[in-house]
Image (cartoon, rainbow, N blue to C red):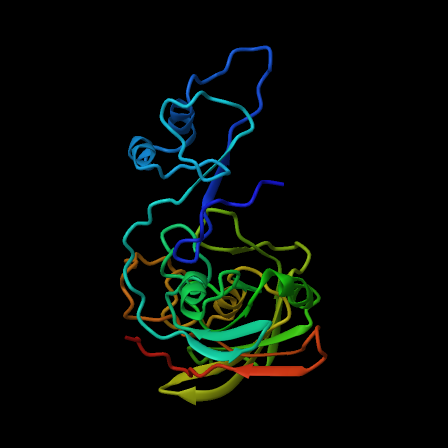
Length: 307
């Protein structure tokens, strides 16, 4: 187990950690200095010389790593990465519920659940860790960046286990609503069942014909608005892009979907057309105290641009 970080969290993010590799104790060191190893280890986009000069790489005890420190194996080095400027995502994160174990929020579209890739500061986790003073706050499930609605988070790592187990056992009932075209010839309600697969690093999921079913959604028409339908979606599984794929397969792709049926070139700071998909309700029996929980989104369809 690695030692505890000597650096405090910054912007709600823990410090990054590196470890020098093992080597043959009887062989020569592959790098003469720690500076040489850090330049080898980190990509070109990290200003290693500048960060060394500023004392931003530190040892376990908080001492700065120096350019000419002799290289040694099995050492941990800690640092905070530079964060790029990110466009401010409009819209409010509504706190629907908060207690000692859970925070339930209603997130706006275009806001990432977790910090990753080009969305770090503009993520639910980073924003709320700072705003709520909860450095261990972490999501119990995820919503796509472009999806709006309810997201559940654990206040501390202590509480993650029981709630994540409830999600894994499908003991949490989730209801979504989507705005999509009407089809007079579509018989509803209908249960869509198929096998969905999404390769890591690709934009879109795909249906795999003949493969065992791994995705199931109950689709119901709830009402009509402006010549389109508001559909109630009850997923019984949680595959990536499942709801978007299942409505696409029914010939009623969700309004303003930037991926389905056609991948659209939408700028990262273009917030004009939110995906019309809302995580509307979540219900479950609390695995810690046995209390019945039921939370509802404060948003409704159709979703308008926020901010």
